[in-house]
Image (tube, rainbow, N blue to C red; front, side, top):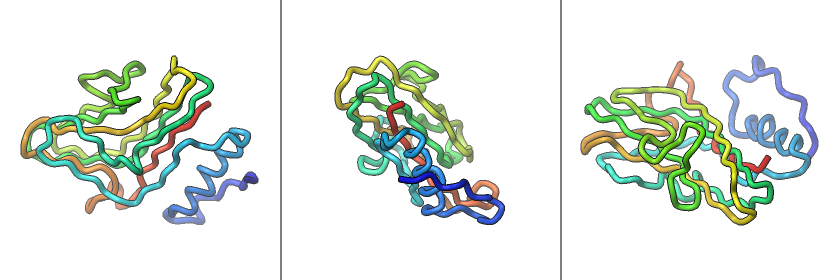
Length: 176
């Protein structure tokens, strides 16, 4: 895949999925010398979770990636919009590796990758580096739970966008 000269974003008012795929995904593939991203999604959808206080996988298709690791490391990137309702409990977002909550680098089994306060609307952009992995197949997934019954969490595009823009959810998993 050839390098594409980066766009002047002032000429594209709101980048679409194909713009992001060309400008970000394809250029990253080029820079990684042909080492393809294991999972790369630009998703224009919304997920919601209500009253589920046990950890639940958000999306087993689009927000789950299986990678054959050779270097012992993975980089996981998540860029999305998150909103919680005004019911007094918030929620928690977790990154899972091979069926268990990932730990280290700001991640733990209690607070996950983000504690979400009640009545919150935010743009969430984080990169996680998972190290010490065996040379084998590993699965990375995104999980969440609400703090108490009656709470709702939204992830992705929703009816009240930040700054008036609907931004796609970006999920990337790759081996450096």
